[in-house]
View 1 (cartoon, rainbow, N blue to C red):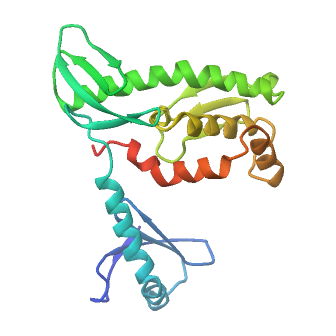
View 2: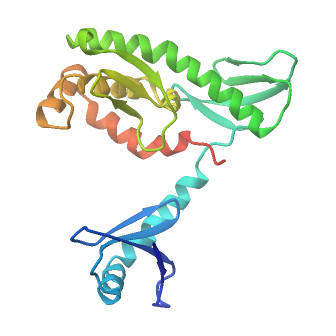
Length: 236
């Protein structure tokens, strides 16, 4: 069972200890929570000293994640959301016919019930359909370009919190459709990244060489996604 600890009043946070057969201590900060993974034999004294040594980093990480949560999307009338890298304003209109339309500056959401839950559901459905239209065709094109069409089995979509894309050993590539809010060149990098896994199911030097052959500025685009990807998630 996890242990909830904070015996030191100078620590402005609690932390959870999870023990296992591991040999070292490690700290994870996620969603405002601090977790210490420790060996079964680790003493409370050792753990607390380790946490105190990492105090500044933990406080900074908690603050960074709090800022990121505040920057997340709100799907509501008058709020701004990005699509293909360009910020557009949501206009919610009550209508018997439910659909989403995009223009240069606006995303019109026609809905029978103007509630945050309904707007987000319609927006996500629309965004997923746009992802299927664009990312499926582009994946097939990139796989062909890399000479890997024979290894591509299928392209599927799932909103996962841990990865923007995933390539399975059977040749199925999975994408998070929220990536459609990123600039087109970032989406294309993600596609090249996953298609390259059809050849190398790792992140070895040879894998990155394949990525670079199709996307020379991949490092810049990869960094952009790491820094801004949290903005594509809603606050709900």
